[in-house]
Length: 356
Image (cartoon, rainbow, N blue to C red; front, side, top):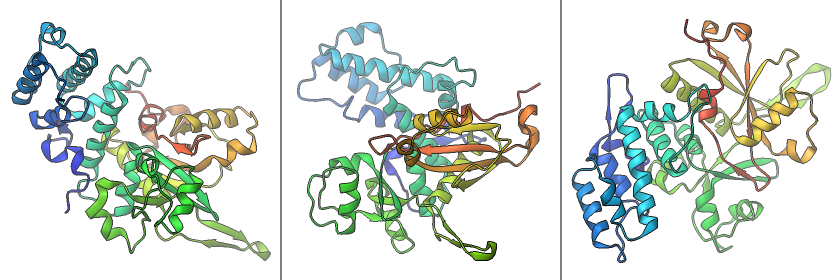
């Protein structure tokens, strides 16, 4: 299997008997090589000494005096954040345990490391989770758990593109149909080969997965009501929403050891709606309002990309007051057409039965 996402650091990590990732010195060295910590011509002698010593022994203790010796305040802050992250990771023992410790279910947690570090940890965890995956749609959908997406709609088609790449583009030529995608996203354009992930283009994804240049089709299946109560459903053979649902299932199973089934929905038609989870900040607010009967305006509703129904395979793992009931999920872009998934929401807010 091709090593997709080589920047994830997966090959520098080890797996324990549970299948969770053990941090290694080689993994920590990847952070030292990042622009935030890499040496620059202006680096002082103390920074050179600290960086070189950590390269040799990334897990070694660092005295406060070594940080105070750094002349550049920004460099000093960057090392403090790295060491806080490193020490927390090593104390937790695995990347998965560290990630879960950042978001305790009782809501008592506070994030004291940069969001970038969290995204890098999620990327490694998801890479581990999908280590044997051969479906390019699921792997591309999984990028959404740690990379922000720009959303475009054109002639009924909903496309997700990597925000960093889209926003980097600055020219309008050479994109063909995807010029419309980027123009709709109100982003500058560059002549670069972006394409929607399809069955024909899927083999290319494995060779370019770290470039994030593939667009994911998040369009729902379309149902047309015919006469005599008949409904014609136009099925999208390889829907990005279905792939994303499979990724969410694996995410919950890997981190919570709970088996769920998730299905994309176009609407919630349930008079006994009891539980919901927003997969991003916008969706959380919208679902809360709808649940409370607060009307949402048409502009806000149009930004809702999808709903999902989540069912526990074993209802006994649910809270007693909602056991057997479906959990509804929401996915929504903001007013700037940006989607920032919060995968921790799916772990924190499921109605799990508390251990006795």
